[in-house]
Amino acid sequence: MKLILAIVQEKDQRRLMEGLVAAEFQATMLASTGGFLREGNATILIGVEENRIDDVMAVIQKYCHVREQLVSPLPPVVEPVDSYISYPVKVQVGGAIVFVLDVERMVKV
Ligand code: 2BA
Image (tube, rainbow, N blue to C red; front, side):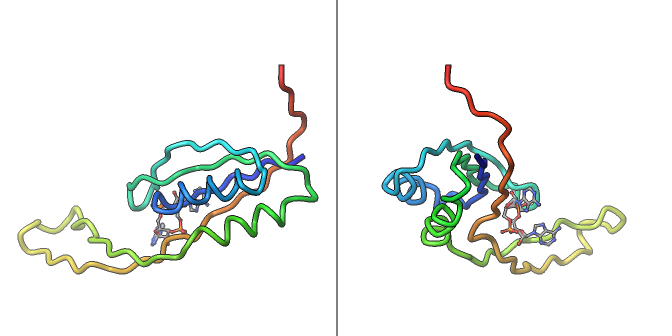
């Protein structure tokens, strides 16, 4: 068995969970925060048999989209704040960051 851990954008989380349930996968959603943007995202845990990993990936790809986001960099610590002009920069976020982990044992008691 494998544990798929997918970090997805807030905008995609609801439809992805619905898509997973419709495809008969069991999933748990945790609220999380990205370290770079400091914005809410969702971490979804999905326990699956190895032969269904590609099916889960297909559902994730269907519902998670790449988006561009503007970020205003913080002023450098050494410069006076009033002499610093910050230009927003674009970063690409998502579709999803996916980790696939080995599961030693799953027990339901
Ligand atoms: P954040 O850390 O908020 O990052 C949002 C997006 O900002 C990233 O999108 C990436 O395009 C950009 N970014 C991140 N760090 C950067 C940096 N030092 N310089 C420039 N741009 C940077 P994604 O790569 O799609 O990641 C989306 C979210 O997935 C991340 O949100 C983070 O919560 C999670 N994530 C990504 N890679 C991870 C990893 N290796 N381990 C754990 N979580 C990860």
